[in-house]
Image (tube, rainbow, N blue to C red):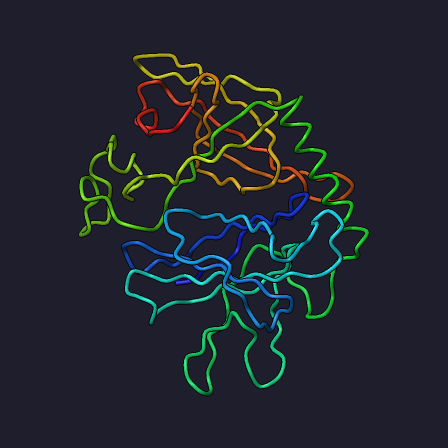
Length: 300
């Protein structure tokens, strides 16, 4: 099993938001997560949050660091410790990433960089690869680029929240946890009930994580027509632009908060301003009102 930080974004004035995920899940049950922060990739590490469960994001308010992320010139490093259902003895770490999302991958000295799991006195398990950019230890983006990125993120957030955006709820699809006792067949590893109100067709109990509010800008939409022997269906396929945190993936559900319309995310791609990744644009398909996803509880 591997845990990795998929997104890390500094928000003005004093907040760093992290998002993580697990791959190659080999245990079923409740995972818990600890978040650790350091001023250097080798440590020492401060545990800033323990026993997180049922979530995939954390916001570090940096209260004890007295830091302003808009003008921050110092480095912060993060790692996530995942504790599987089998207990802390089998806990494992993510690779270390800095506040700009750059992953540390270089070993220095006789000891492994924190983030490597020690198997024995002579062998180390390499950390999982991530979709974050790799860089050698010691190199870092320029302060000027940091300032530009954070300034753009802040201005775009204000624009979406106050003027151009509408509020959505993101339902992140689960792919680890407790298997659904109603519709999942452990022998065939198949879903036997397509409209299950326990897992909503995901095979994992609960189906989706707790909704997260986001502001998005509706772009041009199109209507796709599907023809069957019984009916002709016109499906609304909107494109929506969000800031790049939290990261949205195919299979997630978006809810327009003001009218409770629900959409299945089909595609995602990143867009940039001044060569800096700021937005994610998703294409989604509107779900039919009788779809099981409409029974997912979400505060509106």
